[in-house]
Amino acid sequence: MNVVDWRIFRIKCYLILCCFLQNICLVLSSEGPLPSFTNTPTNVVTHKGSVAILRCGVDNLGTKTVTWRKLPYNIPITVGKDQFLKIDRFKLFQVPYQGEWNLHIKNAQPFDSGTYECHVSLKGEKISRNITLTVLETATAPLIPSINMSGTQIVEKGNPIKLLCNATSGNDKLQSIDWFKDGNKLQTSYTNEIFISQKVSISEHSITSTLDIDKARMTDMGRYVCRASRNLATRMKVDVLNGKKAETYNEKRETHSEIMSGQTKDNKNGSSKLCTDSYVSSPLFLTVLLQTMSSIYKHIL
Image (cartoon, rainbow, N blue to C red; front, side, top):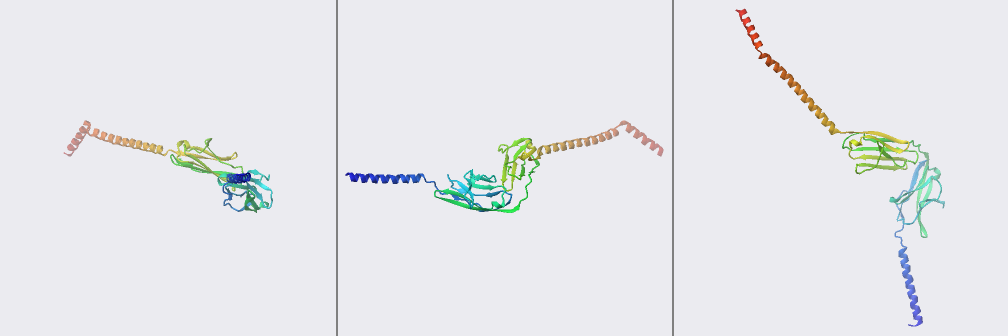
């Protein structure tokens, strides 16, 4: 092999190696399927003063970020988890298990109406979803903080207890409801068959919590309290009746009364019979009877 052929061979090997390394880089840089938007509402209508919730769900987001902005402005409201536009009324809420990056606008005003863009930036391009917000001028009535509890107040031992607590507030400070019994905090316990569930409604500023006890015991009797905040709480008393014990006691009372009544009756009958038998078999009674009959006989003669 001469020098020219050797150089050509080296160039071919170099080109083959470059192609091979390029393919490896492409494989390593592959990030799987591209992000795509889920089916969320694209038109939102709310009232003045309420919380407007703009939802944006993205599948296969990977390491990409979600950006919110209001069209036609280029200034972003949020980028990923970071708040770019420093306005307290705007806040990002992430729902990881649904892949949602939702924009909440507190105390929504008519000037907040418009088109909002949720987009994901890719290499050299972006995918976007537009959501139209309409804020009606009619304001909703202010919410007065309230809390109420309902459910089982009297239950027999072994039957279920179900208590429902609903709290409403005019602000967004309500986060959860705590349950107490006789001053002690309750938590879900599979051993004691106690189950606590909660449902939060951001749009209605309310929280609903349910306390379930599968089988009531005598120790479950007491005063229950549900508390949503320091100044928002209510209570209810629950009585547990021991039905079997009361039934046994009543049966014993009835049996004892029947026995005593029977004994008294027998004693009266026995006493009467005893008096009659004693009176009839008395010698004095026979003597008097004979004398009386003799007098009557003489008088007739």
